[in-house]
Length: 188
Image (cartoon, rainbow, N blue to C red; front, side):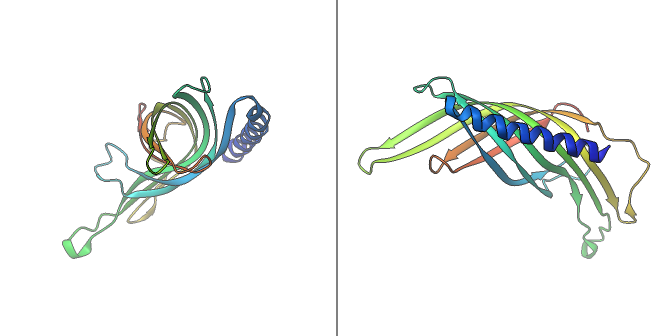
């Protein structure tokens, strides 16, 4: 059920935080992440990344060696996905639709770090390319159309497997920005 899934997610996240604080002393780096997701669902006949949601969680990253440009990252995230169609009555379009899919995800990522130095200004820019796979569990789903909440339709898949590809920019040792694309391998 929804509440038991929420309990297990919180328990897993707590264990993750505890372990990451212990492992930090062993060349591991841990932190929190948050952001905005824009999503769409293939096959719903509504194109465009019109459904905004949030993403929040934590991560642990490990460089293969202090000199290595390669690192591996393990994340635990809560992400809102879905689809949205806004009506345009002025154009004769009265169709309205909203789909909310909330997932607990575990992305496993491989990163390659590019470091560019400008010796004249002693400035260092740190860009990374990242890729990997995410395993997700559907926590909650809801669907609406112009007549209200839709019920009794085809149930959504309880699990999800996605591929990820993105770019990362480190502003400082503790702050960075990522732009990623994620595509589900399994239909929702």
